[in-house]
Length: 220
Image 1: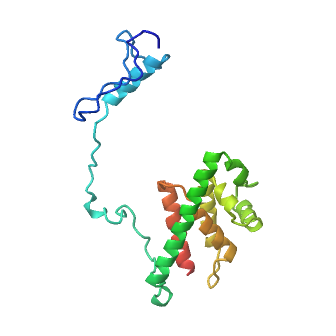
Image 2: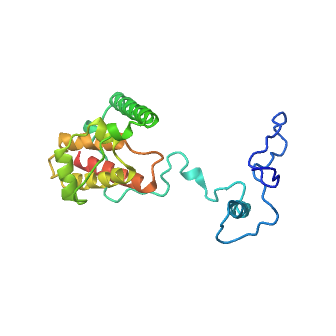
Image 3: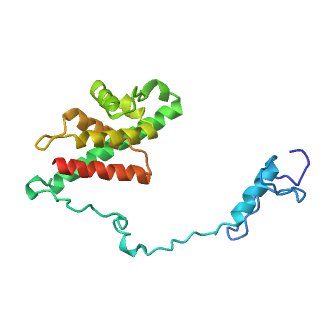
């Protein structure tokens, strides 16, 4: 930056006293004018600083969270007529713990593999992109029937395809006739999509997963 002291990118602070006011990393010349559309770097920084000054330092929730803090379901109500599973079909606690443990292990392994592939630059070579010729229910049915939910497919799931695929899986489940069950391959794809779900989950994804769980419960 030469000898221009008015433009300082980094100014080391004394860390011996953590209570002191931190020094500014950026200093902007007083001659810089505020513009709606910044052109230079200093104009952009000035605009960011001015916008930041209009925001509260701490954002406080103005809603009473005491009613839904435990389960985060205050704003959701099960539709009328929803039936609980018969006692004889309810899985045991031991079985549930085993499934949760196995599922968590799969998700953890996927995350480790993703991180390793991104670090080594081998993501494109190992991940199989999900390509749907016809983005309709029939097109997704053909994809699910023609492909296995392999590791490479799971790694290749992009966020948009993951959400869209979950929507299609819900529609496929809704076509299951009374007295019939979910076929094995569809079940495998459901597992793969859930294991690969990106976190934190968006509200739309959570809504789709609710529909998925409810539809599975109805089939059961």
